Image (tube, rainbow over all chains, first blue to last red; front, side, top):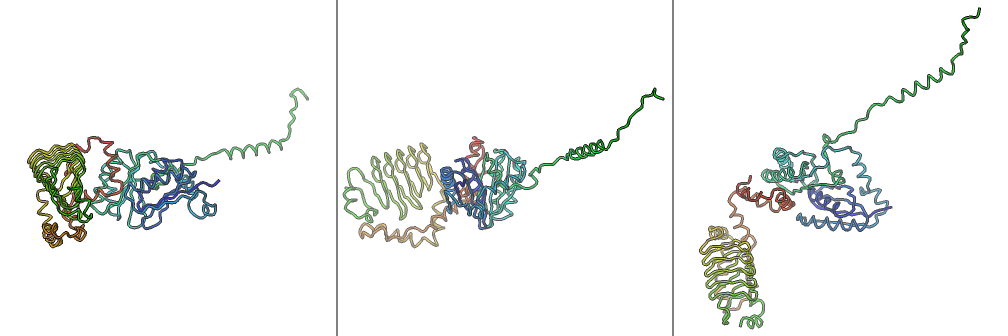
Length: 238
Length: 223
């Protein structure tokens, strides 16, 4: 059964993450992921029932407007054809791939995003944020047009203070573009966000010795088949 | 008298300087000035809005005798219920919010007044160097325009030149004094931060987490 498709595009990564957060919380939609073409354009892709998708997209546009985004483009397709889903990265396969990535040690924490135009400002802001509050630097993301976003995780108070401090530092060094704080992201939003490999815990496979034990059993049973019967004579017979 | 004059004249002429001669009003209005009903304006009051600017006088506003309201660089709004004492001078742009009380002979230079605020008589609010800075900033660009305006002002009632002919003030002239008013680079950085997407939301969030944050941190001392 095919579900409806909703797309919304802005020109900033923190803004699109905040928009995706609002969309997933406003209606029963599934966040498929973010499509980052270059030039600073980011698109959030959601799937769900048509009513949910319509609500989510309207909510997303409203949030994007609050973030002073002039160039918002959005789309709702009630029933995309299967061919479209096969070719374009709009099906839920993408989120399945993301789920098989492993368990992130930074889950269940608030997310802070800070976007600058230029790399030095982002690094300087990240350094200040780590030194200001108890936060972890989770990853960074580039979306073209000189825009790069640093993603931090921590408790909401730490994240808010860190972003506040990083904002001034980024503005001092270079050009600050956007900031966003998500106090409690949903799981699917977390899975769509990039996480550095050092924070991903890979599952460990334990060695199991059961096959060997079965092999011995089989051999023993073969020998038992070849066993020659021995007749013992009673001790009293001459 | 005012209503008949306003209805007979075309809209372009309404904005010219004219003297309200009815028994109710003895004040001078010049430029785009709208006065809501039930506003009481004392005798000898001057309400002057430069081209491109406007003055709005809300419902139930009380303006004392001899006050001068001069809008330049933006709109000057006096909200409902505000009271201005005798001889108050208001220059520039800004908003005098609801039920504010301005003491007599106070001077407000390009600043806004909060709701129900009480300004003591004879006080001076706003940057006193604002006028001189605007002059220095406008010397290169707006001097000919200023001269035009000065010539036009007395000539306007006699000639009946439509307001639309005067060029609107260039946006540069509005921006330059504001930029010059910010003395340090840090302050300018903070001002720039206000337009950053997500800044307002972060401020709201911080306000919820730390309710006394605004009180504790002074605006100038931060970072």
